[in-house]
Amino acid sequence: MSEMILKKSDLADFFKSLAAECQLLGPVEDGGRIKFAPADPGVFLLDFQNTFMSPKNLFFPQSERLLTFTTDSSDEKAFILEDSGDKPAPRAVFGIRPCDAKAFQVLDRIFRNDQYEDPYWFQKREATTLIGLGCNRPCPTCFCTSVNCGPFHEEGLDVLATDLGDQLLLKGLTEKGEALLSKAKGLKKADKKALEAAAGQKTASEEAITVKVPQDQIPGRSVLDLFEAEHWERVHESCLNCGTCTFVCPTCHCFDIQDEVCRCDGDRVRNWDSCMSWLFTMHGSGHNPRPGKKERVRQRFMHKFKYIPIKRDGEIGCVGCGRCINLCPVNIDVRDVVRNMNA
Amino acid sequence: MQNPYKPYPVRIDQITVATEDKALRTYRLVFLNKEDEEAFQYMPGQFAELSLAGYGEIPIGIASSPTEKGHLLFTVNRVGSVSTALHNAKEGDIMGVRGPLGNSYPLKQLEGKNIVIIAGGFAVTTLRSTIVWMLDPANRDRYGKIDFIYGARMPGLLMYQDEWREWRERDDIDAHITVDREFPGWDGMVGFTPAVTEQVAPSPENAAALVCGPPVMIRFTQPVLKQLGFEDDQIIMSLENRMKCGIGICGRCNVGPEYVCKDGPVFTLAQLNQLPREY
Image (tube, helix red, strand yellow):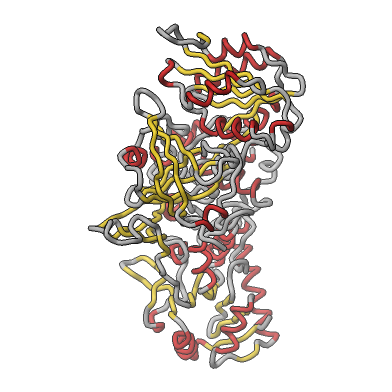
């Protein structure tokens, strides 16, 4: 594991050397919102809180072609589903926040289970090197330290960068990350002073997140006990089932699969879906096992804080990024909901 | 690793109308590639995603038994856009099959036991698979007495007629076929499935009951089995929920932490008692 120093005055050269190797994406401003995009590295931001949308679309696009087919019956391959041949190009992404990187690691465990592996997710994961940027200024809605994560958490990243004012400390975390650092220009080995400064920043950021969302009681409670608890009555009264939370959430991964045909060319496509929609669970018969708002909003929290932990050795389906708290139109606060589940 | 979203191409070899209201048709599908057929190793109780290019996929229980080589059988009720497209398909058409998916009936664990199979309406597909599999000479000795209780509203809605008529004649299975009311020319039993179950009164001793049917049948059959002395872990059921991926990822078919597509569709009543009733 190497720890290197990059002077901010050398940042442009560093980005240039990365961009020569592969596509480079970074945080840029677009209409007042931050997002990851390929751009002139000169406009990449270092001082920002987080992107408006979670970066899950890097590996799980909102709409993605899975397979192709033709409905031209004169074609000998007519109606046979074929691989699209889409291959992800190598790329590096600078500036991923540790919570969002942790979400990728959570989703690695969703898109691969004991029997199946989702090739679309993993091909893009493998082709991408992630350079994270630790959070010097956590937001008031951040609660990463309560959900197995933190402002300088390393899981899911290949390199973690710490902003030390006029320089960055770059820590290689994986083989991919080390390879990137070994090829980059203008780096020098970090000295003790820089390492101490980074450790100090990590502690300061962690201490700045004072909110605590305890979950110690949840593992001991049965699914039915949590499911039938009374507080869901209050949560669903205000919930609109609008789906904003699932849209911006870095770990929400539910999807729909649809066929799209234009003339004779067809694609089988997957699109983000949301458990807040009545259609999500509607049977062909008209029966709906989650018929109302209560069942649907409960599903979202139970999935993240009970079902995923049961099936994924205690892993939580939430990384504490706070996007759903910021954007919920009726101020449902996941921290309060989890406190109620734990109460 | 093989792409789990990519269906195997198959040809519709034969279509038969399964019920007199024509709402259900049985499709015999033949793999276009021999190696796909070999890769598709399934057990009774599993399902597959039937894929129609341009329409999408539907999860349907496999009605054929692995002992029936060379083809797959699916009986499909016409309810939504994909099943309607399938009902409009013709013999010879090309479509796709993705699977096999889900767990199966615990046939290994059931060895040495008496088996009670209770089915209602068209929820008999994977139980047909189970019976054909159990009656195969290679498997029959591994099970005790087999009782098959099957009911529908009227004779024309009983599926797989040729087969249950044959099973009624055999001495290695007791087939109790019933319809809700008297019908002219009907030669079987009359009465609702739960009532017939009470009448047949299978012993819970060293037995298991496989129950599939509409919710109302399940609701009235459970107390009958309980009264007969069946414990909840002796009652085996198969669930349905809306599905897309079929491989435990897309997130919609879960009942509590269990995905019906991957952890199910087969659960014991004892397992279901620990889960929310979101099915």
